[in-house]
Structures are given as structure tokens and as C-alpha cells.
Length: 241
Ligand SMILES: Nc1ncnc2c1ncn2[C@@H]1O[C@H](COP(=O)(O)OP(=O)(O)OP(=O)(O)O)[C@@H](O)[C@H]1O
Ligand SMILES: [Mg+2]
Image (tube, rainbow, N blue to C red; front, side, top):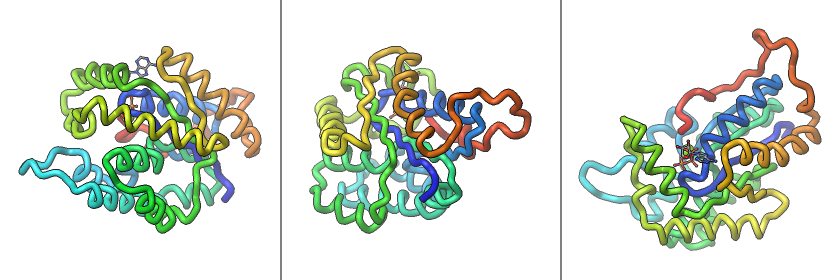
């Protein structure tokens, strides 16, 4: 597969969407062919699933962990088929706000056994792995505080399900992310996320630039002339929070 596949992971409020936007702007400025997306909800059908997964049900019902798991993988299968694989096959850089590690961390922390996660992963991903995963690591006390401040500013905010879960749960999620990083140190880069936005962006760039260089993209020269050729970020402005 010719493109470069990069995912951002981490607990709520760790700064994934903030950094995804910064990184995508940087890559677009360099003129790289770019697809920016997120999970759940990277396709039109997936957005229906995102709503079902994240909005509180009016009747107060909540998903069984196994049902939730299947919905996340349904979203992912569609996303892979319609967005991720075609973009990689076309040689593009694909940037995702959350991917499979989030399912492993959150659904794992909700009690789904490892074997079930492995089985669905084999079925849906068929061994496709990101080339690089940037794990924004922050303790949940700090990250949930950021979420609280952010949500106060968002009038139409309604994706509160995971935010309101217990601090303990978020601690387990963080531990699972870190365990994945320990298991796959070549893929997963732990990025300390407590620093200011600029410092985090610099740490991210230090991991991304060499990868893109190796893949043959020119990342060291700012493009002088960009009018109409400045990359083609798809989905970039839409729906990344
Ligand atoms: N390095 C930083 N220092 C302080 N505040 C930050 C930093 N990065 C992001 N923020 C702020 O923290 C809040 C959460 O950031 P952001 O929405 O990017 O996190 P997220 O990981 O995408 O969260 P979620 O998982 O809920 O989508 C935002 O209000 C953002 O402006
Ligand atoms: Mg976000």
C-alpha cells in the first residue's frame, strides 16, 4: 500500500482534534495529498452510527458492551472500504482522529475480552495497521478538566456519554493505551500531552516528518507557490471535534 497511515489516540481531552487540525494544516501547506477523517463517523453511514453510539438514548437505554463493539467495527469496516483503503492505495497521507486502539482501550476497559477484540480486528482490518500512532498521553484528571472547559463553550454539545463516565474508567483506558504502546513500540509513539499546544505539535512533528520523508514526501521545504495546488484535504473542516 503506497500511502502513509497515521492515527491519533488518547483519552478525552488529550488534544487529539487540536493536534490533528494543526498537523493537517501543516501537511496541506506543504502540498501533500491528504485525507483527514475520524472514528466513529468517517462516512455518511458511519455518522449515523456515531450518533447512535455517542448521543444519549432518549429512553435512557445503553448499549451492551458487545453491541457497542460491533457498532464500532461496523463503522470501521465502512470507513476502511470507502475512505481509508482507497486513499492509501492512491498514495495519500491518511490522518485519523481515533482508530482501533481506542476500541481496544475503551471496550477493553468496559470488559470486552481480548479474544473478541482480536477476532473482530482480524475480520475487519485484515492486518492493516497504521504506520504511526501518536498516543497523546495525559492523566484523566487534567484531560477531563479540559473537556469540561471545552464543552462549556460548545452550545450544541451532546456527545457526553464517555465524558461522564468515571475517572476510574478513564484511568483504566489510559493504562490500556499505554499497554498497547509498550507492546508495539515501533508503531505507537507516546507523546506527553500536558505541555502547551506548540510543544505537543513539535513533538508530533518530530515523529511524523521522518516517516513522511522515508515515504518519499518532501517535508523540508515550504511550498512557495500554493494557489490551487496546496494539497487536497478532504473532510478536513468537517466534523472534527
Ligand atoms: N496542549 C494543550 N494545553 C491546554 N489545552 C489544550 C491543549 N490541547 C488542547 N487543549 C484544549 O483542551 C480541550 C480538549 O482538546 P481536544 O478537543 O483537542 O481533545 P480531544 O482529545 O480531541 O478530545 P475528545 O476525545 O473529547 O474529542 C480543547 O478545549 C482544547 O482547546
Ligand atoms: Mg476530539
